[in-house]
Amino acid sequence: MKEIRAYIQPFMLAKLTQTLLEIPHFPGMSVSDCEGFGREKVVDSQDYTPFMPKKRIEIFAQDELVDSIFNAIMTIANTHQHGAGKVYVIEVDEGGVISTGERGNNLA
Image (cartoon, rainbow, N blue to C red):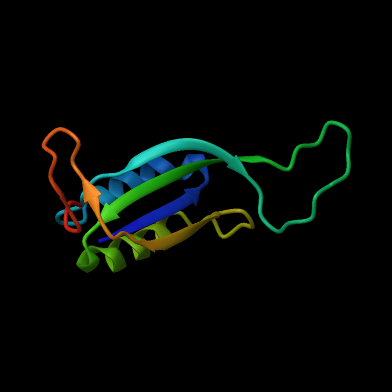
């Protein structure tokens, strides 16, 4: 099982969600608001903040779905502009379902 974590431009969320829902057996996702910045040059100004709004997407998926999900995010969320976002794939050793007590590495 893997976690796919993406940071995208907020205006790309609806289109990306629609595309991800078309992937067979898509396991669902969590979305939250966040702010951040990358390596771009910071302007030194009294009222300037380098933090840009983004959407953070977290998806826990079985290994066989990771490539499809990753490729969809890379394609659909691409604005062809600096700051379009980033995607990471992280190994998940174990998860748990709180309501049932079920544990394992195949709960996505």
